[in-house]
Structure formats: C-alpha cells, structure tokens
Image: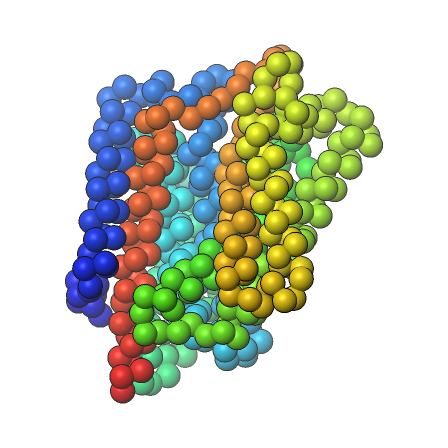
Length: 386
C-alpha cells in the first residue's frame, strides 16, 4: 500500500514539498544546536524545560486522544466510528513521532536519548514515559496497518488484532498519565504539585485531540472523495464539548484552591501567568488569549445549534486547539518554574533556533500524517469506486 503515497495531485505534492522545506530549515537549525549546544536556546539553570518539553506534553495528549474513537468503536460496538478509527490511530502515530523528536532535541543528542533505553532506570519517570509511548506507537502502527490491509482485501481483520486493540486502550490513558507524573512528582514546583494534574492532562487531551481530528476529517472531506461521515463528526463534536467543559472546570478548581488557601507558592505562578509578577509578564497576553479562545469554544460547543453546524464547529475546534496549546504547550511548563526556589522571577522565552527546530518537527509530524492519510484515503476511494 505504500505505493499509494507516491501518487497524488499537484496540491498534494505542493504540500509535501512545503513540509520538506520546513523540515530542512528545522534540521539546519538543529545542526547549529548540535555544534553550539543548548546554550542557543532560552533555557537555563532556572528554567530547564522550555518550548520543546511543552510541545512534547501537548502532542502526548493528541496521541492519547486516539482512544476516543477506538474505545467507542471496539468496546461499545459503535460501528459508525469504524469509518474514522484508522484516522485517529494514524494521528496518534504522527503525534508520538513528534513527541520523540521533541525529546530528542531537548536532550541534546541521540546518545543521551538512547541512554533512556540502553541504561534503564525504573525510578525514572522519563524511562516509563518513553517506553509507554514507544509501545503505544507500535500498537497503533500494527493495528492501523492490519485493519486497513484487511479492509482493502474485503476480509475481516485477524483475531489477534482485536487483542492488540484491547491492549492499546489502557496504554492510551497511561501515556498521558505518566507524562503528568513527570510534573506532579516534583515537590519543589507548586504549580505542578496537584493531585488532579493527570486528570487535567487527560481532559485537555480528550478535547484537543478530537478537535484536531475533526478538522482533519473536514479537510479530507473537502479535498478527497472520502467522506468521514456527518454522524461521526457530530459525535466527536459532543466528545470535544464535554471534555472541554471538564478541562476548564479542573483549571477553575486549581484557581479556587490556590487563592482560597492563600498559599503563596500556589498563587504566584497563576498571578505571573495572568497578571505578571514583580514587573515580569511576558506570558500575560498569551494566557488571556488562551482564556478568550476557551470561552469562545465553550459557547460554540455548548449550544447545540452551533455545535451541529459544520462551520461553527470548525471554529470551535480551532479555538479549542489554540486555547489548549497556549495553556498546556507553553504556559504550564513555564509557569511551573516561576518563581524559582530562591523566590526570584526568571522569565523564559524561546529563541529563534528553538522555534525553527520546533517548526521542523511539526512539519515532520504532518509529513508522516499526510503520507498515512494519503494511503488511507486511497484505500477508501477504491472501496467507493468498487
């Protein structure tokens, strides 16, 4: 089926070339980082995790959200989702590839990343995180490819595939739970020291991932002959609505706990993010932009008429992605480091090389996603023609 990826329209090849160009720019910047070291980034002693880890955290959530189509389809026998399950699984594969690349560039070089596997330390959360990510990615590749192959041949997939599907479901929850443990397991960081961190991660994952999947389904519907289905997109919209409500509710719980308890360590990161602290407030406009888009998303998703309308649903999904990306992919990481253990505010901002390297990784992920979706759509179009 791989041969289907090399057959496409001018638009398809134009998009591929554009992504390859971005990948080349990102790789060139990474070579600069390779020779100069991480000193070219905005990270330092006080803020040792930055844009790279923020993006890793966000895309782990996108990968975990694949379970939102797998679970209803295979556990609850919701046959309508069988039409788009493969799209969710391949989205998870591309997201995990981005996660590993962000981990790779954050650690600095390949030997350091390989040490996670070559010299395993069961006491290290990153060891468990890397392993569950790797297993979940392999599961989605095997499941997606075998289901698609069987579908192309017009035969049921083999029984052992169903076993892997059941195994993949708890792994989907575990990858983001373990990622949350990376944060809430650090007692010196008050913003992250909360028992509902894993719950917050999962709720944000289950709204941002399906929101991205909806937008991808709409793009597939517009540019190909394969229609993911109105019912499927509508059901995904309901999932996004409930998950976004829970996500915002959990964040409001954090605000109440911090300010009602009046514990300075819990209040200060939130004050820094939304109002600035000691004259430092570079993230303040970004966090209010996130809050604005979260409100827009809630209004459009809660009202049934706007949620069922494809155009307003697309706006709502885009708003969800923007709101969760700023909050989780940037604010969460930086906010945890402010103030530092010496009660000083040291601000972080990504440098241009960091941004270009990240753009290259995003392009790599969407390149993989485009190729996989091209194969899926080609098989689906063969079924339509038949």
